[in-house]
Image (cartoon, rainbow, N blue to C red; front, side, top):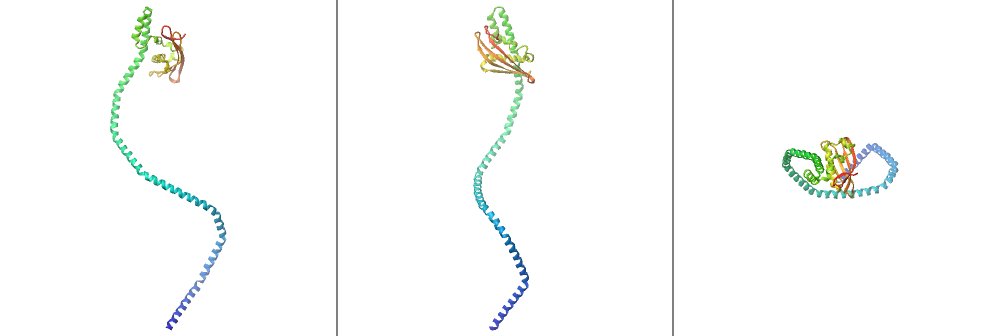
Length: 287
């Protein structure tokens, strides 16, 4: 028993000797590490005041940054709530999109039928177009022939008046001029409306004069309308007849007409004619 204890003590001393030997062997390295630690400690000691000063300068900004972080956190919460709300509305929006797509599909399905009907309408318009153009030409021919009827009526009435047959003159004028009454016979001569020395006298065609005369007759019949316009397809000319003043005389009404004629290349001619109903019941230039 005693020998075992001595043996244990011997082993312990041996291990201590080995440890001391190992420490002795590593002592230079330990000294070097201690020197490095000492140098690092000196560096930290030198830089510590600067670090402390930097920390003191940053400290006032920490609280605002924390406040901003808190505010951002609130905003993030709101954004998350809005995103959740949008997400909840997505099914309804998708259902609406599906409904729109179904309607679009129905419209697309009907397109062939619509195109077929459109083609049929185009074919019908091709058939009716010549008829319409023919009707327009006939209407234009009738419009241009009205002044000739007026002139013929005036000549017949004048001949009847010379023969002393006023009643017959009225009947002849009524039969030939139809709905156009005798008070407008004076306007069959365009000189009543246009000054022979004006630009209009040089440029207005027969068609223009007929259209101008019709517009003037319309305004004498309907002065309350204020303005009537005319245009000619053949010459490209146009114009207006405007009632600028109306009065009542003993013989009958008087209307002052402002006649504006527009020609090509921006040329225009404006004149004023005062036309009154005389004792014979006809319209004539005021004296």
